[in-house]
Image 1: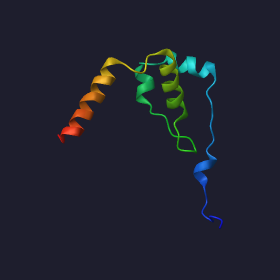
Image 2: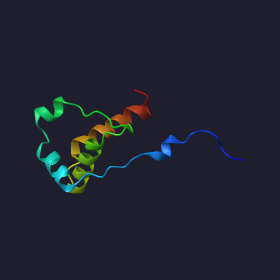
Image 3: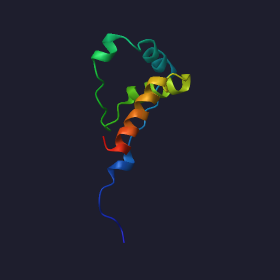
Length: 83
């Protein structure tokens, strides 16, 4: 039996960033101008610039910082203890 429901979730468009776009994005990290203007999601609902920035940070080894791990640990502990 065929499922008649539309499956739009499997028609996402993937736009891989170019190395130049990643370099430009990495060069602008930490600036107030970049942080002040949040990126609008694309037609597929994905913020491709954010995805590219996070992938570049992971590749460069800059994404997982001690502060992020401690914050995640505290949030997990608070969730487990109910407070």
